[in-house]
Length: 254
Image 1 (cartoon, helix red, strand yellow):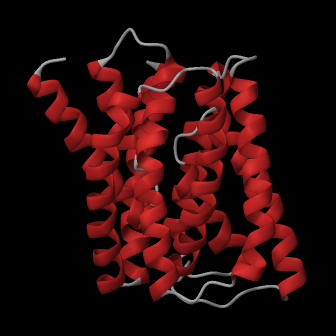
Image 2: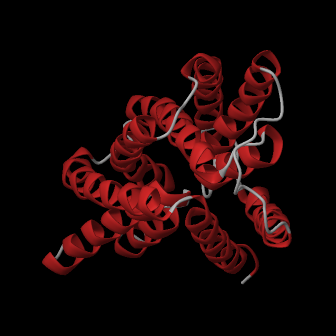
């Protein structure tokens, strides 16, 4: 690698952490950089290395959200377990099957998320949980499991999907949904990283420096999110989803 390529990877990891801490979707920044620097590398190596670095920034953001936003960990722990289970299954499926069909479907799903959020102006602005604790815990577990499978198998936009589903189906505002999303995203990534480590698909020499700058970016991103509030997070969420639609659409159909 050249010095320029190293700097490019670190800048991508920094901004990936920044975006991910606010609204999810940081992989939209870091993954294309890794793919451009290593165009011929196996995808599991790119995914495994990127996840191994970004999980640290996500964990830092989860910690920051837990300090500033009231999170019911009692409700979230079962979902964390389901997220880990789903992440293991998804990463294992990636070693057995092709994910090409999902590339075609993803832009359409993201388009639905974007239009729904855009049309509902009050969507995610107020925190008013829809269900009692028992039912919310159950629904959160279902969401966490299936998004865990998706994250291990494919991955782009997992954090944003977590935010959307927690706002849409559980009645959270964007700040509370982001807090839960960060913790669950750490769980799904950790499970996938275990599988990638077992298969030898992680370039550890890159993980440490990428993780450091990712944490710095995540710290800056959470500070901005807390200062600006749920409305700002909603707007960044729309920008991230729009960019994901463009990127995944290009990858799938052109």
